[in-house]
Image (cartoon, rainbow, N blue to C red):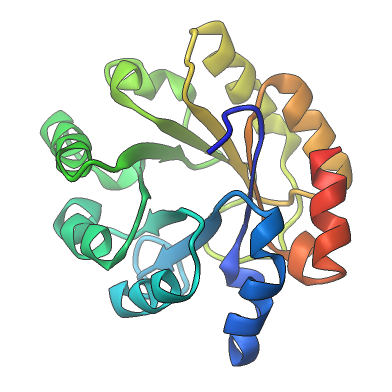
Length: 214
């Protein structure tokens, strides 16, 4: 994937009654697909499991960016890696010890895949310092994780700047409330990986993606 700017539509906002058709219609103009996995415990919603990720992997060719919003990301990492995740991201808040965080990073890297850690809005970026050199991605949440269609929380933009200031050269991803206007804000701050759901699938996907690229 081009490191300059990655556009990854979030399947949480897609129409699953015609998912294959929706994905095939725009796959040529996206860089990756973002898949939110929720367990009803870490966040108050339930979405997709490894079987669905595997099915999606069979119909697309662009990388699958799988975001684990679950209470046991280390325990389920193997299942999602086997299902086809190319980037696997866990919430640092769900990994309750240094050993668990390092174990998650080791597991993903040993599978030859890219590894990320995500931050809830209330979590400061300083918690990433012991691990930042090993990460391929940091995912900054600009909404409370759990549901699509929420409003962008601009109080989290400073985390993007912080990552740039620390010299992080991986993917700085932003997820939550991304549209034409907020995309400009986070790109200016240094983000290079945009996750957008409602903005893409709620209108004309081709035009929405063109606007996000700016």
